[in-house]
Length: 282
Length: 304
Image (cartoon, rainbow over the protein chains, first blue to last red):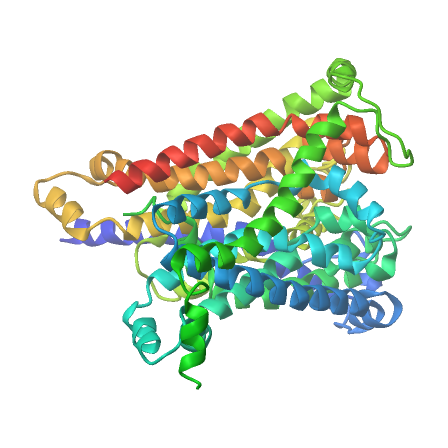
């Protein structure tokens, strides 16, 4: 009896230890950003100071510098603007496509769906060189419109796939009833199916926003003027490669732009996984 | 009237064979224009002499490939790409399996732990990597400070995490593992929850121990989904340059340079589009291989 309890406690401690170690590994950099955000410059740059505690009182100076003396606020606004425009384009293209793949296309719908999904795997690093040239020829070099044009190339494939699965789960009776009432198929889609697909649409909006926020390679390639950067490129290229590293402001910039969106994304990650692994789990 | 109008349009727009293509068309057209055309251009550029400033473009055959392959920079990058991708992906799969099994058990605060574990994947990767840049800083590294505080190294023994070749490679691999691990873990967790409970219960009743159940039931059952996680991770590891760009820019002395980052530095920063395209095109056969395996997995899953 006593041996059994000891064994159970041992297992429990082992389990806790494993989970704890992994959690420290994954979350530590974000904790470190948060600590550093409020540290005084002198505190940070004295090597003998214990870096885990505040040797001098916490300060908001780093955050003030970030918003008042760098283009950080502008980068956030750029990212949001591009994100919203890409959301609109993505919805306009992938809502009808996802619906048609789910309902109107027969056997070839499934294959076309997989084909579209596979294009999601095409990495930016394979395409960014010709794209840089094409963007230049279109006169979009250094313009946020270049990102608005190119970003749907990775949001549309994934969201079409996601919405296809979503529409398949809606009972067809709903549209059939609307069509008996005199709506066309298209009318039934717009007036009946889209309004009840709020959850699917919301998922697409969140994914598109996070994908836009994460994108790095295209923005690095197309944009050269500091004021046109998005946040994921502006912080590492402009803030890091100044002559002096303002670690406090830098960490503030990383934390502010990553943790809120991460928490939002967290609520939708299961849908992402479900969309991703369709076919492999059954 | 309101009822009659849609009926008339219905004559052709409403027929599935018209409406289907009409609704899919824009998305497909967009994908072809924005992904397909640049892809063909990438192939074309790789056999041309195009550069950032030039207006003309001549066909030069396989000259770019021939000259690229000979450079030690390229050979180092090719080798580094394989080391980086394979080592990091093996580590990811092993660690993700352990973590997914640990998280498959219920405990208090699990949702919060899951959020913390997901952070590296859901936060913008370039920003997360800057967090590491600070943690690994040559003068202020918290890891070095801790090692010194524990008496493991002296004040003169601080590691240059990103400045010494093997340490730099170790660092970029570790941070890449850090970034992919959450994704692989949640995918494997999805696989674990899809295993019916009674299978494991029955095996337990029959006296199968933990390791026997693990290796003979659990792991074989999550193999298809593990393959999906592995393939996606492999594509990312082979083609991604963000972690390396932010941490080392390929340095020191190209010891962490990979094909993707070399293509960027040659084609975009160096302005030699043709040579950059030739380097990037080396990534393509690899993607085809991954896509084929993916399709076979998807088909097999459909049959069952």
